[in-house]
Image (cartoon, rainbow, N blue to C red; front, side, top):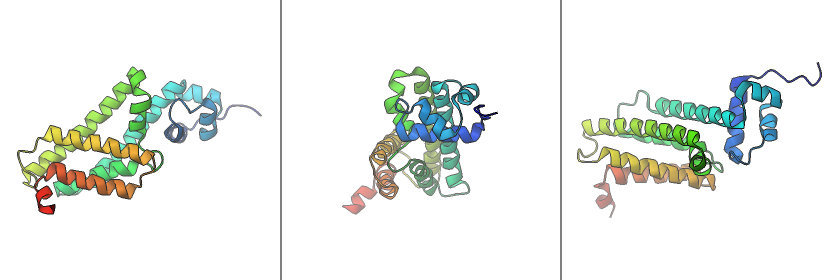
Length: 200
């Protein structure tokens, strides 16, 4: 029947909605933008995902699922802990997009200060990322690839803060290749501080 709302394809529609939010941000993305991106009528969107806020929450969780999988896949089978750390953070950079940055960091700036649910979700994601990196740093210590007196918690905090900064710069147009190069330099400074003196 003409005008009948199309049936939702949840996975495809959610990925399209995620990209729409990623491109324009939460506030600037209208329901018209979302129906155009997903190819679904408003009735189908509401029936499948609820309101705009609920759709955004689902899209953010999808982004986290994709990012977490990419981090894990990036270093599966890698026996060298330092290389595993670099591959993991590289995958995080690769999940960002030139001109768009990282959906999580963008949401942290735009939405989290005013939305308790989004703030909670972002904190959970950050904790998972920090826990993942901390395990890799501890592995590097056990393999004597980095000094044992390196403070794991502090080093991970510095790495994640730098990652967030690079993401913001990528949103402003920084190339992924440049971001990865800067990130690797930062990893050396944080995890292998003796290299600072070798370069001077």
